[in-house]
Image 1: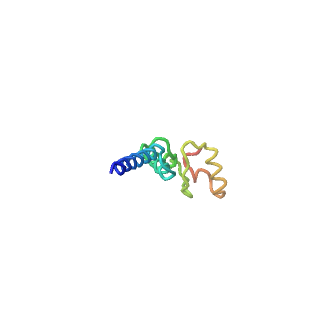
Image 2 (image 1 turned 60 degrees about the horizontal axis):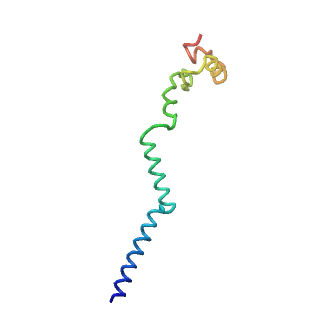
Image 3 (image 1 turned 120 degrees about the horizontal axis):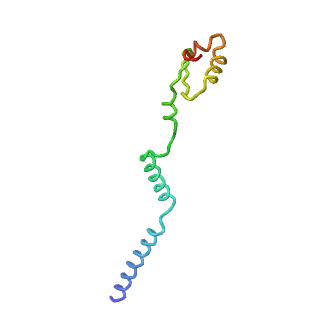
Length: 101
């Protein structure tokens, strides 16, 4: 009876130690992937650094009156004239962009 009691105590101690060892080691690839996914979701929710696509779309405030192509407001007049010459060679640049000189 004493042997059974000692053996069961040893078995419980061994199992608890082994489970504690597994928790310390951090698990496998699945756990690492889940942790990385949680970190990425937290970063996306914070909204810090990210894609500039929305900001670039909002900055497109110049539009060709012929083909309705949008351009960013920082584009030079010479670039707008190039668009008019290349895309609409039969038309004047002022027809595409009335504000041009």
